[in-house]
Amino acid sequence: MQPTLGAQAGSMLFRDASGRYCASLAGYRFLSAFQPIFYKGGSLFGHEALLRVVDEGGEWRPPDRFLASLAPGMALEADRLARLIHVRNFAQSGQGGCLCLNLMPATVQEDQSGRTHLPLLNSMLQSVELDSGGVIFELPEFDVEHHGQPLLQGMRHAADMGFGLAVDDFGALPARRDKMGELCPDIIKIDRSLLLDYMAGQTQRLPALLEFGWQIGSRMLVEGIETAEQLEAMRALGVELYQGYYLGRPGELPVLRQL
Image 1: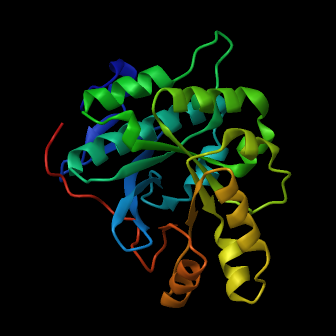
Image 2: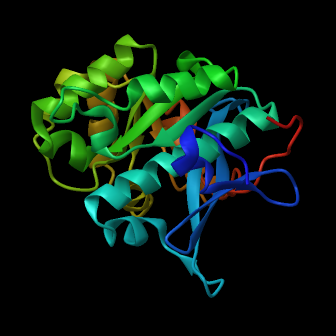
């Protein structure tokens, strides 16, 4: 076992045979995968950290469904453990560019005592020599629009600490986008459904959402690029950032140093 951040966390954290960090919680094993994100010209922007969940029988579980099935306190602990292994595995890899971390709203919102998890997360980054300026927090558009001012205040506080902000699944659901206009995230990740609609001939909505993002000063990223045709079509629209299986599948990063 590799003790980290106290006995409780340490009892759940370990390295595999390759030296990568994993975690266990309630009989489930957590692993890290990282999917690359590229600039329009093809150079690397960074990686999105993705959670992989394996049950006691060795079966892979969809992370979103797994987290949704947990009690709130357990879900928050699972979210924290996922961040811990992602940060350590990324730091060990020596990869350049940004690290994008998916978070639960409770991670950035103040709790009943007025505290957040952000100082602990910042300390974790400092302990592995990562700077907050290279870390981007991702939250779905649904959470941004429906969790109200406490979440917005928490995200602004994260930005004040130097973290980047990204909104995921943009355009997946109808929304007024009032909060998006207030937040002005650094990156907006267009939901893949809009890409598919655009390629099928529904060419009005995606450009309108791109224009909205540019007007509030956000970089625009299209997810789910799976073909050369999709990539070229998005380049023609002026999209800056790209992610998808055509460009790179989620996978493990090398271990260049052990923490």
